[in-house]
Image (cartoon, rainbow, N blue to C red; front, side):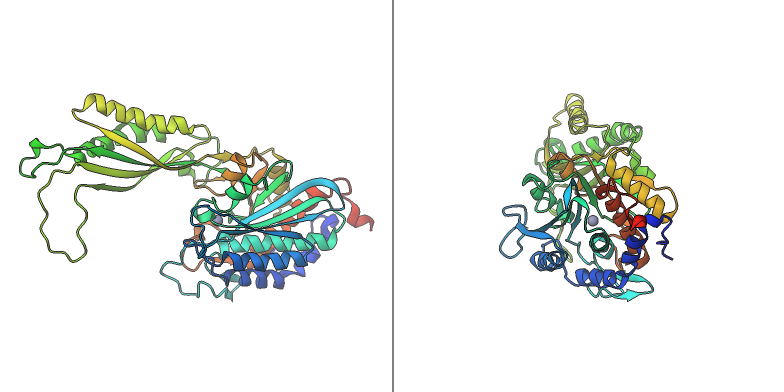
Length: 442
Ligand SMILES: [Zn+2]
């Protein structure tokens, strides 16, 4: 069931224009799914950008294809292409930007549908990226086209971008564009990222992350006389024990103001991704016996997700303090910490114009109050916040986050239509500031 019935006569023509484009929305989503933009390695970025470029030029946009030269993964075989399109209004006003990532993650096992077929079945379109996030990208384009058809005299500007590499950190995509000034507050005032957060939720931001490798050291000796050496794995055991006794309880006791879903992610969390010490693992099928050695090195990789109330320094400092404590308490203990990556947490105020506007539009279209949420992981908002210095950004789009990256990923057509209605009405609220009654007067 779709709930586009106009509760407000001002939007009758806009909603009708959207209804007329239902088949076009389906076709557009299918076309996007059928361009396999797998990342890694970053395939067919140029193809999808050219497709979007043609489509948006047809809707009166000025477009730019931008390659993120020199960013991670960019090479002649897999260039990191992005497309940015802008359409000026007839009067001065704010610019609203919809930014979607064009890349999709690996297909993986377990599919019963063709992952790049874009098949429509029982009101759902299937394929890798259907929900994350080609359905959201298509919904935003259709929303903009319906808006342009009914309100060609809007104020300000509309921008749409398709960006590379979100699934691998966004460095060749939104981060690169932000560095080039595409998300500066002088150019863009409102950003909507149509990630699959559900059609009745406004996502205000996401937690931060810090990834690091910790190594403990030891001394090689014969395994029959371990007392002559120093076992790095036992030292790592002591690290893990401190994590269990001190770090995990301390993290669990911290609670955030951020409305993170699911609820378990409202505390600080840390995953230990891997552990390895001593000899390399045996090849599968190898029947060789182990050699007798005391290991001189043990490494773990940690994935620490942190809250907007914490700082990167405190997150890092907490772990270093714990390791320094072991250095005092435990004979011959020594360690190294190597930072692998970090992203800042980002949270837009729920009273920010874009958050209020989208929430009001959800209420109008869906007939119920919008829910404000935040994401446990991260998405491109971090770059718009930190590099672009733009705080007026939310994620809003169709689809269920739980389906992202899974086999038989799909997006519902009714959900896309409802989200497109919310996006179109958000445009009306932001770009038709002084003539809200225009439609009824005509
Ligand atoms: Zn995504």
